[in-house]
Length: 193
Image 1 (cartoon, helix red, strand yellow):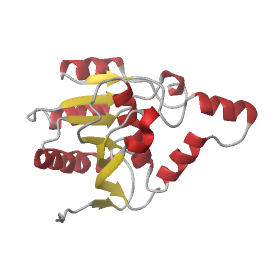
Image 2: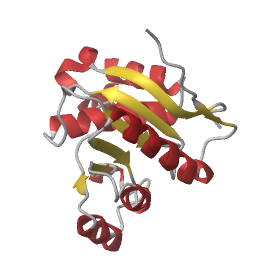
Image 3: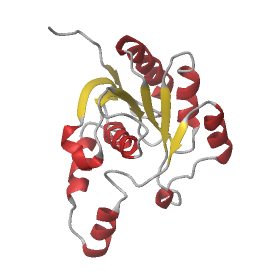
């Protein structure tokens, strides 16, 4: 048995794809009966958009921010947006990144070389930044006990800001990385930008 499903390919990565990515991720969540949505959000804006779009579905949304060590380079979550996420029932997770930004990065910075998780991350970047981030945030949410590892979730992520990638994933904990399965690509940019 097989299913014909369309994948949305965006010509360019970036925030201009956010609304469409959320729309088609919601449609697929309904079709599959998904109960957990994991979304990457730096400022909190994309998390709010997802929460508002999914408000009529019985799903738990987990918004994953950059870890605090990256806030100086990128951006810290906006406290007002975090408050709004909380009011919308979204669980916000800020923790060490599963693939990049962890102790291995510190070792590479100090001593040089390439670390195994960095190789994994850069392999996933060949698909898109959003694919790497989607897989990473799902493991982070699983490690924090916010999603189960025995049912599919939808991960929404993107390139820089906004969302341009959505995947159906069977999660795993980071220490069981090779159990993680990307089951479907819902949306992805064709060009990596």
